[in-house]
Image (cartoon, rainbow, N blue to C red):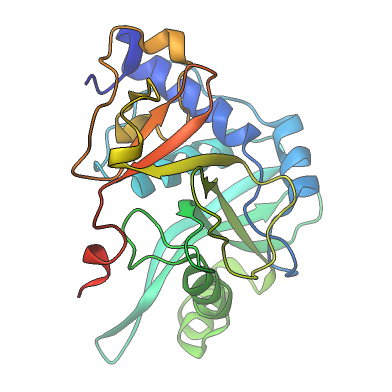
Length: 267
């Protein structure tokens, strides 16, 4: 399985991913810190996609996603990137890191943004991720009540407020996809989802053999290709790890090993 489909170059892959980020809806709603569809549409309408650049960072998808947002902020006519990945600690104890400090050029306000690209599957009234120790409810609570509050911590105020100014707004930008079971009636938790959230289907390995799914590599999860773009890939028969795949109708699937989610919940 190729890292990039259809002989896509690294620059083309970045371009595809920029466009996907600007089009992806939010996962969540119902909290004043959440960047909703209206805000994302406004940001996207004026966004400038940098041309001819390639990602040179770490392999984790979250690092790549944060880099995409870094570039979009840096090239946006309405925002200035003041700082990123600010590590905050007290008495040598790490509290966490602030993803982005951003200045709204129009209003002059300083904003704290946290960004996350996430994929969750409806299972027994919960939303575990491919690694089932990751859970939508827990992740949202951590980002809203801890990560976004780091810029309100006395340590942040003491060390950075004089440099960057008082934080006027906080935003959680959480995008990705929610997968619903194709062959069971599992539902997710009652967390308030965005009505526009991108969706897919999921099944277990033994259920996938006749679906003619074609697997894609993790760098492609943000911007999945169309089925005919990966015609050279063999159809999926079985998996030993969570695998994203594309169906002949271009729907996005997750195919899970038979032991999921229980084995990946172990510490």
